[in-house]
Length: 72
Image (cartoon, rainbow, N blue to C red):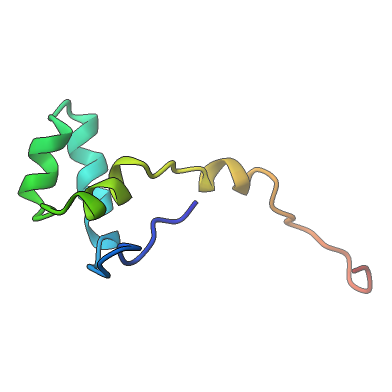
């Protein structure tokens, strides 16, 4: 789904770091080093990025593109 904007536990903003995290992980970096570099030192914030599953692209395949008017 969509990355949560804030950590569920402490409230720190984490969504702005997700794209950079994903990019560096794809390049083969160690997740622990990447999270340290992004300033995520609390384990509650780290789990927000580590446990996120990006499924929005899968859901978009089922999005209705042409809905006839008058049908609900």
